[in-house]
Length: 396
Image 1: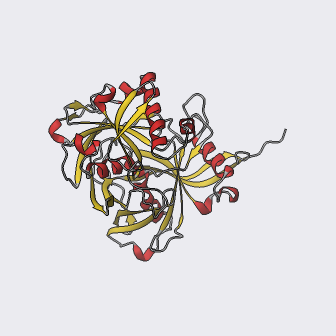
Image 2: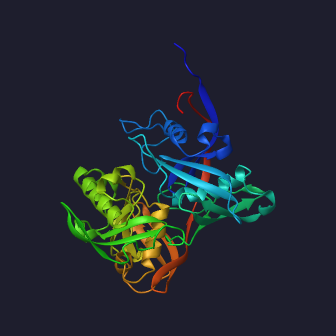
Image 3: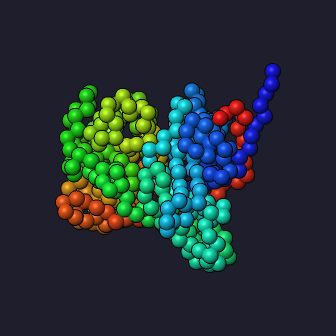
């Protein structure tokens, strides 16, 4: 019996924010995988180790969580005034499915560093010491991201003293600007509030009628009040992920919210759109102990937020959901804004299971429509391993 040998593909394994993923240059992929389609999806599934009915991704690079089952493809930008095009693929753990419907805000923090290290940014744009500004075109959602990458002696600086809750060790700070993060009709994505309302009543069979803020900024997100579903906003992962009934409830909320947002036509389609929308619950500030044992005081935060990604509660906060939080908090009357005390604000500090995070956003109402120029947050990133990944030759 003939056996096809493994093929090896240049790749870098990186942490960005509270996520990890396998990064590729488009030009390094096998020719069949250099274009969107089945060959590319099959390759990335095999790289990550999916689908895995055991839920472990033992035979691949994935870490068996939504935060570590991720892939990134970069190429020289096709857009004017941009350095690099960035495609993000969220790989399902137990299904043969790669979701291309949204961005990963955490891995966005690693894109600039990867682009510089991989020669995708013109050398003239990189100072010997200082900050390199990398202009990123997020191709999944057709939006611009600006990454401010620290440079020391002509190289990307990865080490430093910046601490990020949800990440064990300090590193260099990377500031990320998500430009015009909200959906816009000109871009074909509809409005920031797809239903036209800041707060809707979402009728979910088996759950009941819930107040919901459904927003498309950073990533489509459904916000509900923690108290309306029996929670207080201080929950850690096990309280949700260890409760099958809770996970079923949140998936029902997500599916029905997706229909109301116009992302799908029927709730059954939600199973094939796992990455978006996200669902999160919010509450007013309260004291709690983070998963690391860190004491978080009510006075440390403006509100509490817990969010689910790929069917499980996130151990910290997705970067794109943080953009949605910051944007919604800046708009008086949303559930996020009300949980933070209401009124006008340009930044919030929110509590998540691993600690706290600050995100800024400036919103304005123009001709009756809410717009946001940009959302800003700081993350960190570093290369964990570089070389080649290997996959069986028949994987494509």
